[in-house]
Image (cartoon, rainbow, N blue to C red):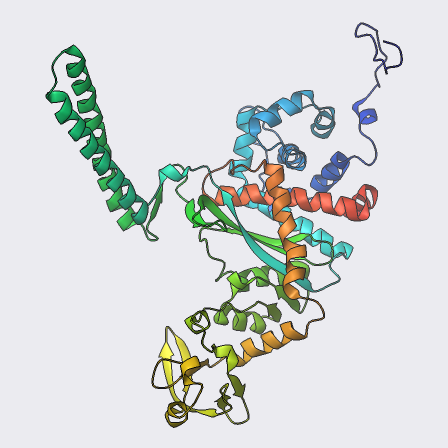
Length: 479
């Protein structure tokens, strides 16, 4: 085997290093995990640090927390895989002092200490703020759908039930027709076929009864959904046309300078429309800034949310969706009409002024209406404007806030939406790749929040180690 790199003989005696310390280099991420957990106030975060007076001694929460952070940092999230790694991984042996808890103990720690683990993840953001990593008060928010431990077949909605019942009814009708055909034939084969068809029909009728019982449960559910495996998982539409998953909507806010995830949450609704204010408030508090510029896609657009953000000192950048059917039909949209604040009128594309006429309240929103019946009747552009007698423009009482936001976006030196994509979208892709593009391992909303907190803590740890280095981060944690 000349001209190849040759290994040592397996039977060759070796003088191994005298201690585990020699196996772990000074810049090993395990050292960051060790210092970070040792410096945490575990009791203040919610971990139980007082051992029981009786019974078998328990593992210290610091040991199990180090085990989990190391696992998520190295794409090992399963409790059974962590159990194996603790028995053979030299870095984990160094980190835990050669302790190797069984998988049940490891899994129970994650299940029983959810709020404390989430608090530990949030504490790392506080540390990043103290280090001085948040010098730009700019962040972006986005949501992504993550699969739950619940298949689509075990999630029921009224629409799904209707389709399944129709399918079962069609199958029953088909089998009944086949049974009629089998009854006209003679012989043992025909009798055997008839018996099998009867069994299939009975099975389908039992399925139909189960679906009818589930229909009552779905009707009684607050949001019209029932998931059997994970009761908190919900069916959500995804970007693919006609596609969807059963899972959770993970919200994250990523700061613009170093792309660290400063705030996150998990919600059971597929829409992002009501999440802007809550996520902005969390991000502003986490970054410790007086004002914050928040970038979001048009899925977050809500007039009430934008007004609430500005009251918090957050300046949102959210494009307004074009929901009017006029543009789709080839007519002028509301954006073609210009509001003149000094005169409180709208100027139409024909140059005429539409004065204020009345105020109404629709779905809790105060709307002012503008129109001019006489001008519309005589207007040459009326066919391009409206099929009605006249065109009416409604203006929300806080529309000036929306107009100001649009002006900010138009005058921005670079496209806020391009900047948003560069900031907030790749962390989701990274975390999903670490997960193996699979589902959450845990069930129920609170447990899923714990799991995503561990993923985000691992992501932020790796980012900061790349930004400032392992040694400076250890020194900053100890400071």
